[in-house]
Length: 198
Image 1 (cartoon, rainbow, N blue to C red):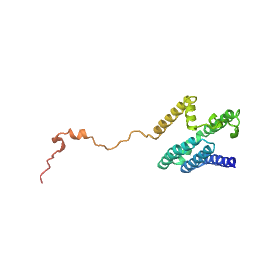
Image 2: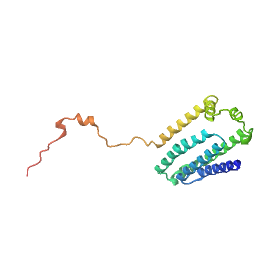
Image 3: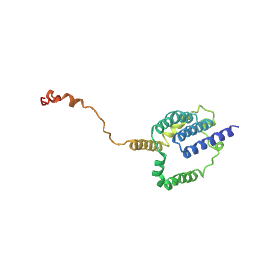
């Protein structure tokens, strides 16, 4: 029974991911992304990865996706103008998912994708005081430290690129210069003009 429930939430995750990339409305795409994250967190919870499941809900659904939703709702996105400017990049865009699927198939081909046959940590096998948080921390900062640092650099560059795209250059605003106002002389403040007598 648990296997069918797991398969059901996996199908929900795939459906939500397809809705993200096929939705024409950006707000619906972000809401579909939230649905995908929630389904994926349930899948991780059923696979006994409680830390990753809670992290996905708190960090991505609670912070990142909500930020995406606010940004999408505040931006004035004109779909017609966006499509006309990006239509010339469609062949290149279609190559990216094809290359991604090809790399995933080549990378996962030597492995069996059966969850029941996956190797378990020794703490789970011998019923020890096992903590997946500790195991993730040890693996992340030992074997995958370089990958962790590269991911941080990529996220930092993405944040800088987003700021550069939104930045529209310096804007001319009417501001007051307090130093200029204080340093003026009394005779410069008022100028008397003698008019003609009637």
